[in-house]
Amino acid sequence: MRREVPLASLSRVPAATDRVQPLDVLHEQDADRDQALVPIRYERMAADPFAFLRGAAAVMAADLHQLPTSGIRVQLCGDAHVANFGMFASAERTIVFDVNDFDETLPGPFDWDVRRLVASAAVAAQVNGHGDKTARKAAREAGRRYRETMAALSQMSTLAAWFVKLDLDSLATALEGTHLEGEISRQGRKAEQRTGDAAAAKLTEVVDGQRRFRSDPPLLVPLADADPKGTLQRLAPVYEQYLETLEPDRAALFGHYSFVDLAQKVVGVGSVGTRSAVLLLESGDGDPLLLQVKQAMASVLEPYLGQSQFANHAQRVVVGQRLMQATGDPFLGWVRGGPNGDQDFYLRQLHDMKGGIDTARLSGKALIEYAGLCGAVLARAHGRVGDPSLVSGYLGDTEEFDEAVADFAMGYSALNASDHAALVASRAAAS
Image 1 (cartoon, rainbow, N blue to C red):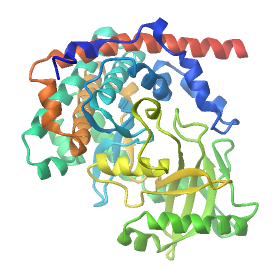
Image 2 (cartoon, rainbow, N blue to C red; image 1 turned 30 degrees about the horizontal axis):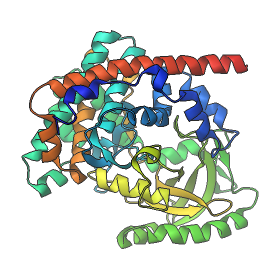
Image 3 (cartoon, rainbow, N blue to C red; image 1 turned 90 degrees about the vertical axis):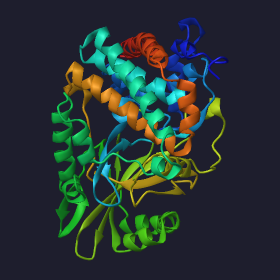
Image 4 (cartoon, rainbow, N blue to C red; image 1 turned 90 degrees about the horizontal axis):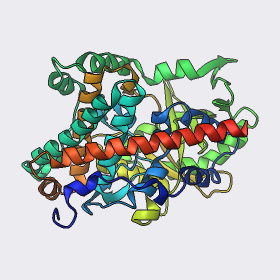
């Protein structure tokens, strides 16, 4: 495989003249989104080149399609940038660190995820003012840790590799004495405080003795106030669909909660404009449960890697997440609904002991370490469904892969900076 697709070929970036116009790719996505929210999407993407990269997964997919690839398939995250890794509560109520965004998940070549990750590490470093030297080191470290973790997984038994997970305690031990240790510890403590109760206190208020979502348009807009009975009637069949996608014990647990309120909520960067809502439920004792209901659309990878085997895109997201995460959200499920009954949505807990690393807070050395951590976690996720021995055999035991993807990251960061500048210029011209 290395003879057919040399590791050095993974360093290539597409020539600017050969690319599909990035803004055209983004505007094609606008047609299926809430038009009132599309300007918010571009406002967020225009903030800096890293924000642009986060929202431009479709642009990068079009670029990667032009480049040499290993062809070794795994379950891809599809949007494996450094801000899509973080902490959350496992089903056992311990905090783990893992990939946490699967909107674009699809089977495909492992190097597509790796190249998006290393590019994001380089761009994050540059945006934070750390310079090209640190940017390249961060990208290289992500590649190195991916390669070395995949090699370690290849030496484990199949069951041992499947059950590998990174909880907060083991992460703290592994990072002891590093520049990243303090930030991981701080974010872990914050994640422990981000419970359903805390989220409910922030997003809701008590009106006439009943808890309701606050109104903060356009970011949070209560939807059930005008027609509470009608809302409940429309949700009833969706509830039934959702319960069928849960394991029986999780469905029984969910049965302890009743619907209280529904609100539209804007989330993310690239996801802005897709339909997203939050459900407020309460147990008989008044304990709140917040679920996010998020629209799933076709993966940006599908035009290049083939259609998903799942007709429901939310099912694609949920199955991909269950395949890649070592442990997951007990309330993760999917439905089909919307005004015309033809939109796909997945449901998950909102703010359940979730936390992330803000790369803008990290020193250059800490950012390099964090990029390496993400590379190791991505390898673990790929290794669950892919073949670690095959991937590791292709990568080899030299630094050639690390150097190649670091070169790619620096080249792609320049393309991304140009794309970001084009977006800023187009917004200025429009205003």
